[in-house]
Structure formats: C-alpha cells, structure tokens
Picture 1 (cartoon, rainbow, N blue to C red):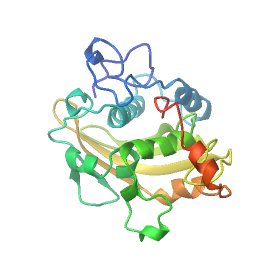
Picture 2 (spheres, helix red, strand yellow; picture 1 turned 90 degrees about the vertical axis):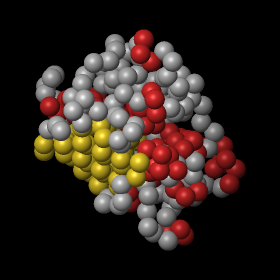
Picture 3 (cartoon, one colour; picture 1 turned 45 degrees about the vertical axis):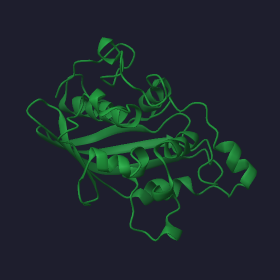
Picture 4 (cartoon, one colour; picture 1 turned 30 degrees about the horizontal axis):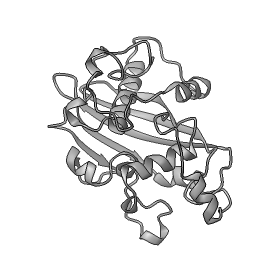
Length: 239
C-alpha cells in the first residue's frame, strides 16, 4: 500500500497537501482541515498501532480514501483509487461504479442506502444532496466523526478489516436536539487493490440504525431551531 504523499500538515492522510494537489478541485474551495477530528481520534481511540504496521497502513489508507471521496469533486484528482475500475457496494447490494455512486448522492448518502419504507427512514438519502447530507452530519458532529481500524483480517491485495467510527452529538440532527453523548458505529469492510496499489473495489457492512439511532435520541426541535441549526460555517472541518 502506497504511503507516499503524506505531508506534515496531516499525520494520517495522504493526497491532501503538496505540489501534486495544487490544482485539485476541492468541494468547499480549499483542502479540509482535520485538526479537530485528529484530536478526537487521538483522545478516543482504543488501539495505537505501531508505526509501519499493516494496521497503521490500512487505517491511513481508509482515512485518505474517505477524504478524497468526501472532498474532491473531480475523479481525475483521486490518487488512492482508480476511478475507471472502482466499484462500491453496501451490505451486499449490487456494486455501483463511481458515476452511479454519485447519482446516489455520494458521501453519506451512498453509505446510508436503505430499503426501509420512506416514512420509517428517519434520514432519507433519496431526499438529500451531497451538500445537504454533509451539512447535516457536520452540524451534528462539529468535532468530526473519527475513525479507527480495530483489526485487520487480511492484507493486500484484498484488505478485510473491522472499524469503529465515533463522535459526540453536539449539534442538532434532522429536527432532534443535541445530546452531547457519544455516538458509535461498528462495521466491517473489504478494500481490493490493483497491481498499482490503487483501490478498485470497496465493500461495507454495517447497521445504519446504530448510527441514526444515536442521532435521534434528542428531543424534537421546533422549526425555527431546525433552520438555525442547519446553517454551519465549518463544512471543511470534518471527519
């Protein structure tokens, strides 16, 4: 797994700064700042992997992939994956290409697809855009949604790992008051790399209800509070 491109500005993500990124098209006009979520990660992680270990390399690869998926708008700027070969699937659903993934709304929307009836969804990806979904989660998690790899079951070319995401609900979410409590999400994923160590296939397995259930425990907000909470100036500061 390639580790080149890691700059001093971020300890965990490649392809974020440096000469190779000077023409990168960023979703919010500039590279994201991960200082807050890096601090959350370091304070709350349950594993500290040795430098250079397979687990550390996988963890950094996933963070780099996640950053590119959420923040780079042009597929030509992706460096952790091959956009011409890449496919994504969630919980055993039919794999989709990068273009098909964008049509699902990208970002959180592609990760929260569901077959639930619309009235039971709580969060409905069919009604969200890539920007509105990002705004919803960044508002709920102003310090970010940290990621750690808990275990790596196999190394490249097919990487299978267990992960943990967590954050503190310190902002409103879809009409629900912030609780200040930790919200966690556990799951499994498989990343397949090609001969150039680019990601060509991603599979995720997790229960979206584990995430959304934690975000919907707060009391209901009135409509004026919901509108105010939806305005977030910190979209670049994300996990």
